[in-house]
Each structure stands twice: as C-alpha cells, then as structure tokens.
Image 1 (tube, rainbow over the protein chains, first blue to last red):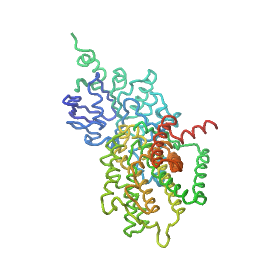
Image 2 (image 1 turned 180 degrees about the vertical axis):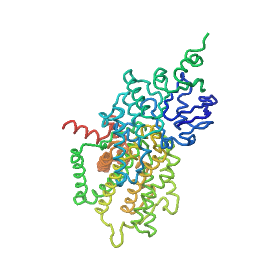
Image 3 (image 1 turned 180 degrees about the horizontal axis):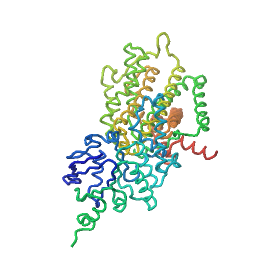
Image 4 (image 1 turned 60 degrees about the vertical axis):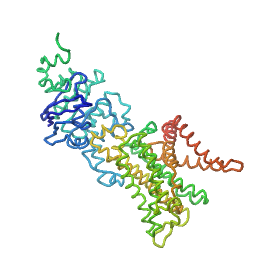
Length: 251
Length: 338
C-alpha cells in the first residue's frame, strides 16, 4: 500500500528524518512511535506531501508520489487526520465532512455558478456520502451544527469522517489520541478497530504507546530521525533498544 | 488585516428545512421589487447615486467572496475596476461594438487577475494586501503614461452603450443594467458558496494544509476566486465607463479600493447581502457628508476631510461593536425578537 524508501529530510543541516524505510501492507494497521523529537511529525508531513523530501522515494499503491502536491496524493487515496483540530470554521459539521469528498467529485466553478444538472447530482452524492461517514463515526446528531462548537473529541471524529468521505485506501492519523479524555480516547480506539475490520489500511503516528500497542498490527519505532526497531507490539515491547530510547540508557 | 477576515457562518446550509424557504425567499423578492421600482421615483442626481451604489455593491460582493469566504485580502480591487473601465472604454472609443466592450470588461479584468495573482497569491494576510495595493498604484501610473489609455487626461468620448439601433441613453436604463449586474453577481456568488468549490474555498480560508489534504488544489482555487472577484469589479468598471463616458487614472483612486473593504466589513464579511447593505450604507453616508461638507460656510477641504475621517470612524466603530457587520447584527436581533 505505502512504501517509504530511504527517505531523508534535514533542516539547517540537522537531520529530522534520516534514511527511513517502511512498507505498509494492504489492510495493515501500522503504528509509528518514538520519543519527542524522533522525527514522527516530519515523517508524517513527508508522506502527506506538506514537506518535500531531500532524498528517497515514497510510493502509494505502486505509484511514485514523492513529488506530487498534497491534493494529488489525496486523489490517489491518501486521507489525513491531522494533529489538533483542523476544523474548517464557519461551516457546519456536514459541510466540513463534505469537503473530504472533493477529490472524488468534479463539479467546478462554472457548473456550480450555473447550477448545472451535473452539479446538483454531485451535491446529492456528496451529501449522501457525508451522512454515511457521519453515521459511521456517530456524529449524525451534530450534522447541522457549527463545527467550531464541537468538543475536541467530536472534532477529531469529524476529521475521521472527513477522511472517510474521500473513500481512502490509506488513512494517516497524526497523534489522534492527544488531548482526548479517557472516554473519548476509548471511542476513538473502537472506531479505528472498526475501520480495520472493514479492511482499511491505517498508519497511526502516536505518542501514546499503550494506544498504539492496542491497535497496531506492526509498530515502527523512530529515534533521532532513524528507525531503531520494527515488529509486532510484543516484539517492540521486548526490544532493548526501544526500552532504552524511552527510558534512557541503562547505567 | 487578517483580524478583519472572520469567516462567517453560511446559513444556506445544505439540507435546510423546506418550510423556511418562503421566509428566506420573501425578503429577497421584496428587495428586488423595490430595486426595480426605484428608478421611476428618483430624480437625475439621485439616480446617479443609485447607479454608483449598484456599481460599488457589485465590486463589494466580490470583495466579500474573496475576503469573507476564501480568506484572501485584496486592497487593490479598484485596479480590476479600472481594468474593466479601460477595457470597455478603449474598445468602444476605437469603434468596437459597445456590447463587446461590456462583455470584454470582466473577462480582461479576470485575465489580469490571473496574471498578477500567480505571483501575488503566494503571499498571505497584510503582505497580500500591500502587494495588491501596489498593483493598483502601478496600474494607475502606467495608465497615466501610456498613449493608448489616454495618459493623465484619460479616455474621452466613450460612446453610450447600445446594440444595433438600440442605445442606452438615459440614466434609468443604466440603473437597470447596473442592478441586473448586481443580481447576477449575487446569484453567482451564492451558487458558488453553497457548492463543492465554495466549500473548498471556505475550507482553505481556515487551513490550507487540511484543505489540500482533502484534495483541494489550493493554489488554483485561490487564483480562480481572485479572478472571479476581479471579473465582478471589471463588469462594474465596464458599466461605469459607458455611463460616465470617460475614464482617467483619477477615476480609480486607491481610496476606492479601501472604500470597498470598508463596505464589505461594515455590511458583514462573508455574507452576500451584507456586501450590498454595506455598499448602500457607506454610499448614502458619503452622500450625506458631501451635502454637509459643501454647505455654505464650510471650508473647501471639508468634504474630503469628512469622508476620510468617517471611513476611519465607521470602520473602527463597526469592528469594535458589530464585529460581524451590520447585516448579521440586525438579523441576529430580529431572530431573537421572534
């Protein structure tokens, strides 16, 4: 599904990500963990296309994407849930989710301005998909509310709905559990489990090790911009390199 | 400047209750009827004000679309108004059919916006504001130097608008044309805003990153909305050229661009009707001040000082006390009383 080959990115001569490789299989849930400053966010933005790589190759479903802008990657089936609440202000929850269908529909300015039949058909289709996605994350009751008024947990779910509205092949989540209360975190974990059961490929970048361990099939551990370990949650927990990266070098 | 660009909620949300339809359409119908009836009751000088109000409203709807919905600031909207005016003027003075001049005005203004927009729209917030104002200054200075634009004197003797044997001679004809233009511009804006491209614009106003990752080609959409708002201004400029009969650099001062921003903010950014309300409020206010400023016994500088001062005061008062603008404040109050 996603293949990252020896990707590097430096800022002012300091490597944030160095020779990182990882392959995510179809239907896999991959966790990426690492202490602060390990390069998780940089790697995430290299994959989404909001940062350019210095070296290396990134391919999505065998198509080379590392020079494509973010919206072209979205069209190829990559959907993103950003860290924090990237809520489109001044729009209802449903409208926020409808934006997610952008790359799956085509009606442009002219057909919108003239209300052409194609545009009406598209609008109905987008609204239907958005309502489906909202139902899936349990936000149907909030659909007509202003998105900015949602609590953080629901804003995160709304972002997941927006990503699902694009009918993604690969769902990327950047620290989805951060800032959530325990109940919200549990609801999110259940949602991710449901998506995995439905066969979606997921990459989960997370600070919270317990959260990732519960959900991921495999985990990649970053430290100081490099991959220091990769394996099942059980293998990772037992890996001495990982333990020392998180707990400091043993005396 | 970015503080002046709140992204207002859109009330025409998808899936609104059908029962509220009449209540939403009715006020629009009443306004349309009054707009159509007004020219019959206005004398010539009032009709002139009415036409200028409509032209300002046309430009301001574009400003509201650009700033209020798409979150991009333009302090150079007068430049596109000027491009429209000069396009219509140059074509008509050289014997082209006036109707072609009128149609070319928005098209050339939009094309000009695309050319300057490619480099400028990489800028954000007040950088974009300064760059757009600079565009207008450069354009005016070019128009004042070049021969085919008539230099500082401008283009004189632009023929009246007409097609074949019909000629639009009297002011009430221009009033109808202007307000038909306003209606067109409002309709296009409303249709765009509630649709797929409109949602994409509103999305990128908050977060270009999240919009791009949702599949929105951010750069292209910013360019298109910039061009669309320029086309609105260009259309207004074209009508202006035919109505007044001449265009010169002094017809399009930078103050005009600032006036459009004030109108959009006063009326309520990110509301289609607010742009018209703002244009009406400011135009009538400036007219009133002109009457006071030119009253016997007032010093000669009174009119200009008054209008500058009042722009500033009105803008500050609105931003402080009615941050959403006049129209949202009034509708919110009406809703509460109901």
